[in-house]
Image 1 (tube, helix red, strand yellow):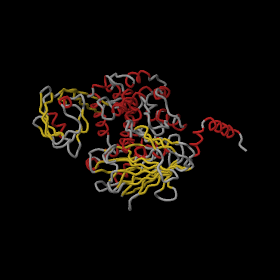
Image 2 (cartoon, helix red, strand yellow):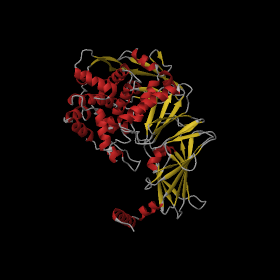
Image 3 (tube, helix red, strand yellow):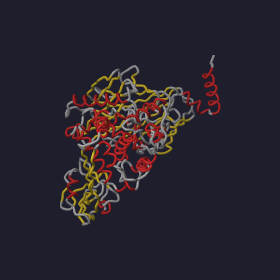
Image 4 (cartoon, one colour):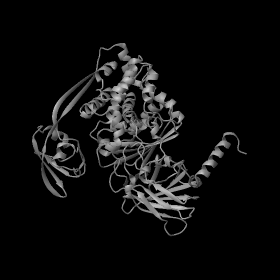
Length: 596
């Protein structure tokens, strides 16, 4: 007999099934299994199989996500899918119709077991570098696994069919064998990337929580140092939130020969990281910054998150005004973590702040576009747009908001308290916050109305009060502006100096230069490597016509560009020696260990 709340739920389910036969059909499909294997002939694609048992639907829609959680840019992954086929019990293929770039409708024809197969092309480098190579690969769930519309909450399994000798690292739980994993839902499946290939593995524990590092190449770095830094980061951030919301966590680290930087993407109980050998060789602290940023996302984004992030479909964007908080303040806390744990010193920290001030103050868009609008516009503009960065301004807002909260509360309330409050109030109840809840939380904690701060600096475009608020911790700031030559924003490929990013309104674009062109020289200066650009531009004279030589379609072409001007901002921070007890207390608390 079914009693109480269970009986009500049962009756409600029965009503829903009678009212919507398709819903009932979808609910019967309790077994969805995926299989993935690498194309070992070309090493540039994955082959995916999806099998659905106990199917009673007349048709099913298979959907490739248009974006991935944590990366706020539309990617339309369906464009990389080929050879989509569907089969039932009969050896003849089922009728499958491509509805648009990322959706396929399959007529089931009475089959209770449906099998779909397709290929996903990874022949070119995309998000955070190349995904597949002869020694290993990164499996990004959203880029590879389709979902069946209406079945996103059904438990799934995934089998990795790997070349001989390859290992598998993933946050998903194993089933009967090492290569067969399970997920509670499709959402969990795509939130659990995998590193497959010939990797080295390392482990450490913090309390009862196990941390696993899988690394593709350790030839250029001492793993002992990376492990020590990672453990310090994990211990500090876990202590801040009084523990971890999981029993196990994976760091999936892909070391690549190309490039000069690094990046990461957060997931529920893992993160995938890509570091170039050049970055690890030159400054391993940059890797620590990325690790600290991505791990802080455990709380800020994966648990404390805007309500709009609670999605069931992956075809429409989840827009929020609060990416400045999700990403920029996370970057601030990443650097605070490194400072408070001794991985970097105060000079390193202030240098990071100086670079952020210079970047923001050099961008004229700061006086036009609010950081909230920049958060919304990223879906159209992408990460490398000409507009202000919610990472950069959000970083500075995190620091200044932290200082202002401490100032008005006599150092009783800080940004630490804000995160702990939001974690307890929202995350632990499984709820997302609304657009103005951050302001409401700050005002509630401090007992001071922060609406002007948010209206001026976050919703508005008023210049940030660096001098006033840095003084709260006894820090002097000097900002100088100088007019210099400008060719617009430009990025070159390390391999061949081809242009990957170009300011479409800048002098080079106006002269006829396009993305994909190989840049040979500007003026009398040859461009031998991407790092030459900064030095080269500094030697140019603003306002003069300058010859630009490029190669396009294997033809050398000479163009004439009129060099523009821009402001170069220099920021300098210094610690005042003669400060009040209150300034000293705030400086010690915020930059040492966060304690009041």
